Length: 356
Image (cartoon, rainbow, N blue to C red; front, side, top):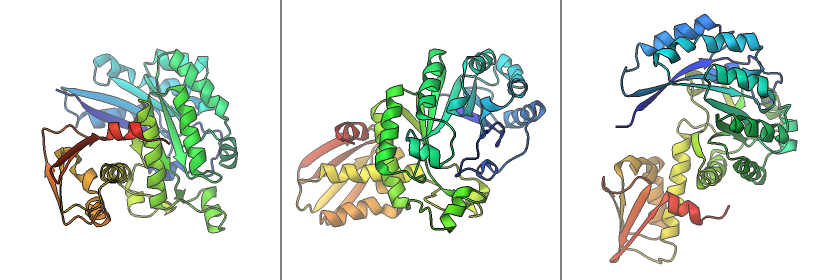
């Protein structure tokens, strides 16, 4: 039986950040702010452990926001020390931190190893020097290469976070960024379409008509290509799109940009539509089409408001499309039946034939 994964989030908003990136207001993004101390960490752990089952689980403590390894060493130590009793008891199995690529060195790594941190995610955003400069990131692409190599040398699980649609960015630059990161062989990745958040310099650019965010459709298209690139190279994408907080869902924090509470589903649904079109590309007209899919994938196949089915039905002039759920079918696979023809394909098969 697979163990259920639980995350205890600790937000260290803006602590340690040496630069004010034009897209970032960390307090707004996380919905939390203020200085976090060791006692706060203990209280949050106790609060969460009361609701987490005791058996057949993996519990992870994740320090989100800010730049953890840019915090003064004594404060890093205080926060990590607060977790150690729970690691020793087996109540928490993993510790994850997020930080900047230019805030990793051997001294920092030795501290993280001593306090049993296993996962380090780097806010890369882009490997394009112009995009990094305009965004006021304060680090270079070489900083990314150096930090990933050092973390992998010490045996950490390494994550990279990519942001698409920043000022100066383009689809070609985003694809080049991901291809450069693939060469470094990180373990996991996150993809974020850039959003205009309140109280950021990018908001000022937006209101001065000096920055135009991507449309939702454009964001889905580029995120789809980046997802395919990462997964084609055996790098797991653990999130697409910003985690929706209560304030974001209420429309209080995002001024403009391609926000959607189910961004990953939009992206995966778009892959299913492309796959359907590919499998039927040589067919001129079909009267009846059956599509078999695993029940867990039914929403992704159908798309928002069944738009995938309606699109393929209209495009191929199909009279009737019947979707059948089959528990025997592997996940992320579909079978098409029409005119005594049976075709099957998985997303893995499909992405392997694509050239990006």
